[in-house]
Length: 249
Length: 384
Image (cartoon, rainbow over all chains, first blue to last red; front, side, top):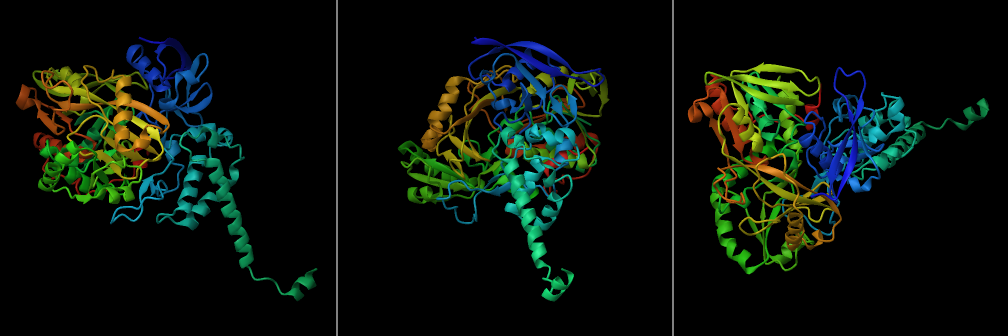
């Protein structure tokens, strides 16, 4: 029993194909049917060779990132009813496509600075006190490494050396709560040519992030940190004696 | 040797056997952890859930719980868990619960209501008691990926986007599998001295390709994710297990689980609306804010419960423990082993038992080394 039939236009590409093509499917949809459920329906009912990534189904693993009608989305929490007309599904941009909707995440993960801790201090329920023997409640980082921010980034689209919003936001989090990380090394890493200064502040990454990381704001915070550090550095240079200043004037 | 199935069990088995010196190839038809593993609510079981009715599972859980924290540091939200008693009936369960935990070596701390509310202010204030246990939250994908990462670094070939078309069987001996690479469309044979079927709820389908029967019941459960972290500890209902009796905080979400029914096809689960409603109703008994919290997602995952279709209807009565089947012994088919059942928490232990069987069959004499081997970070699973 279904409420409607929706048209999905899905990007297809297999190694050896001359070019990608678009394949159209008519998919039964209920209220609440997600893009991921629709793609799974195509896999099960019409074409088992359709390649797509998924794992958790609740916006926590980050594997099912795609572009839906041009916008970066997690397929598992995007409802067909949120999309008007035909639902056009493409792989995320700025990463190599392996096949169909699957991109190679190696190129994404390689951008992150190391080490890569994923557990942070929990800021939720500050009125609660942890049980004896637990110093602070902890939780996973917001970043789910989905790659949507990189896909949406206009700089990454033209410059594949740019480390991109996810990795920079990650570095900022590590500087904010170091967990044994080397703050100076991270700042130095962010200060590289392909780092924090390469961002054009389009804020598309923050718009695309499904997990409230707000990468653009974090990149801006990194820049403030780097600028402050430079100023501190300048101040650390001893003032020249007034006579010398006067003499050179 | 060839492992079919890239879930937690397959990954842990690839890791174990690689350390024992086996040449391991693993094939998975989708993304790693895409079947059941990645979809679970993310509870690292203390074992307390099983302490009364399924002591074998409880023992497995507490041992692996302790061990995984050691070999996968940084992979858990280590906030512990509470079993919360709300009714007189729950209170009647308390003595058996505490006794079961003591029998199985699961540490407990009994908390009075005011103390429990000090730890978790969003709990249902009518609670009568709470028992603290060493539950934790795991990332259902990233923790298992560490086994894949380490296996890969040690030389295992982990191939996803590969379908198994057939198990190669002649004269009662399995010699590999016929596979198709989804990326290239190419069909090839992978030769192997031994094939392990590690496909969870799909293991009956794969076993059929080798002409043997595996008594598995795909038993899905519905889970609900709401936005906001309504508790920091895992919150369980203090009773014999039932629907919607756990809230697992995870990242900035709260996950309510779960229900249980039985299906024929583990690919076709659906998300019954009445089950989702039950998660809201029962979950808000534990943490009332579940009812008002913004919806994030509802989904189903199929457990691979062991038992024939003639057994129970709901799946709840079936054991959560696991089973390794050497089909040479059970069915006279050589070179084919099935590992199935179990749960996310026991992935390493399941792999150890299965790898012992595989090692004997392959003539490997290295002992299991996974208890001591600290795993690589999950990101290494993606490395070229």
